[in-house]
Image (tube, rainbow, N blue to C red; front, top):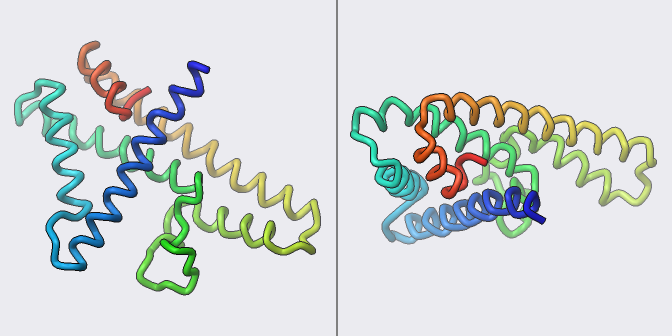
Length: 167
């Protein structure tokens, strides 16, 4: 149960961030304020404050934090229907979801599943390809997290764990 919570907490945070970013992007399109970049900046400012870092210290670790966050989004983009165009419109050219890492594997598996005539061997191959992508991306994420942990105090690490950046 504890392991499930450790996995689910960051996933839910990333999912919420994705939905919020999408809503803010829509607000921009309608003339509202916000956008993903502004949202990301506000989140980073909160992280900086919770870590009690000076601007100089924050600027030193920010690239490490951003690498972890980017890889987290990449890992999550192949789960829970993420990476799919909004509203299921596969013909929507405004989304860059198909060019994201892992999207090809997800799309190939979805197509195979939707085709009732797909042989089991092909399904197994598509599953293996997606699982391999996820395994590699997760391993890369763990390396990036370890690089970030090396420059943090225990208190800062705890703050980033509670924020879902680290595990």
